[in-house]
Structures are given as structure tokens and as C-alpha cells.
Image (cartoon, rainbow, N blue to C red; front, side, top):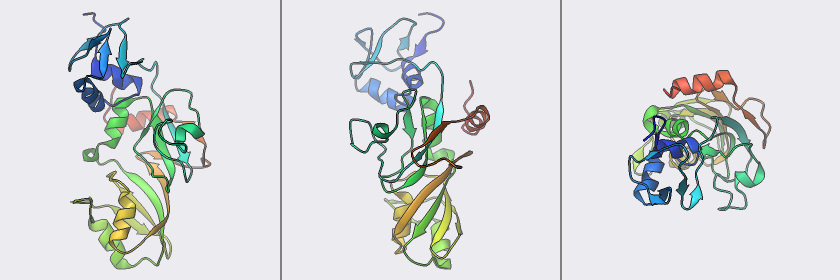
Length: 237
């Protein structure tokens, strides 16, 4: 084994295809091969060895990138093959990247995409309490009881949401900062109190702001943004 050998889960993670946890699951399921031999948990990859996932070559990314993308209404966070409205059918990124978390088809706003599996995993872990901020409009006037109930924790999906920050901005509009990523979380929270979301726009993830990006546009994060993002996620190197 050479000095620059890399654990198989890290090797796959650095390709941007899967997080380390998902890579471990793929290895356990027998989906990963190293030079034609089924990989095992903890297998090491040496320079020059060929790694495949589901029969397709895995190549670690040469450099880590993160893009901020303003997802328009109607696009779907899924693979190119899975849906005709996939974001990857609407825009082509310079590198092979995966989205960090999802925005549902009826939502819009900031979506981060990266080829850094470790960073993606760190951002999405609920226990890390990373903030995501949204502007939301509902179908009827907002009351003080609604604000109080939303910020205190709402029973949905067999759990209770973590306390959140919420501020009324208009008769039917509010800003909300959550630290979870439950399926259609904000919509379900509103439904619990008898409200229906008619507009949902994500404007921030951690330190990354949507800013003036137009729908369908993307930009690469600056070095300063990347440094702060990795600091908040406690990722070094």
C-alpha cells in the first residue's frame, strides 16, 4: 500500500458522487469495485487503481467547487435521467456536481451544488444545526398565535420540529430560519395551523446569500465564502 493510499469512502466522496456515509452504504451493498474486485469497508485505493460504482468509473475531482444556483419554480432536484424537469436538464455546470439538500418543485431560490461530498454531508446533517432562511407567503393573514406556534416546534412527520426563528414581514408574508431539512417542512408546518404556502423562496444557506442571482443563473462561491463555509462546517484541508 502506497503512502498516498485513500480509504474507499473518502475516494468516492472526493469524486462528488456520494457522501462518505452513502459511499459506505454502496460498499456494503457490493456496488463498488477496485480493479474488478468487490470493495470492502475500509478498503484502500492506491494511485493508478480503477474504481467503479455500479460499473461506472469513479474519478476524484481535481478541485473542490461550490456553486450557488437560483432554482426556478418547476425544476426538480433529481438526477438528469429521473425527470424531464431535472435541474441538470436545465443548466450545465463545468464540473460534475450534486445538490446539497433539496428544494421541491413548487419552491424556488438558493440551491448549493458541489463536488465535495464531505462538505455536502456536513451541511445536511441535522445535528449540526446549520441555518437556512426563507421568505414565505401564505394564503391568509398571519396571526400572533401562528408565529408563536411555528417558532415553538410543530408536530409533523412523527416528530416535532426544532424551535425556529420567524418574523412577520407583511399581512401574509414572513421570514423563517430553520435548522432542519424535513420533507416539505415549512409547508407541513404551515398546514398544521391551517395555512397554505403560496410562495416559498430560499434566500440563505449558512453564510451564502441568494443575493441578486436571477432565476436559472448560477455563480461559483468566492474564496472568502468558501473559507467561511468550511469553517462553519468544521472542515479543514
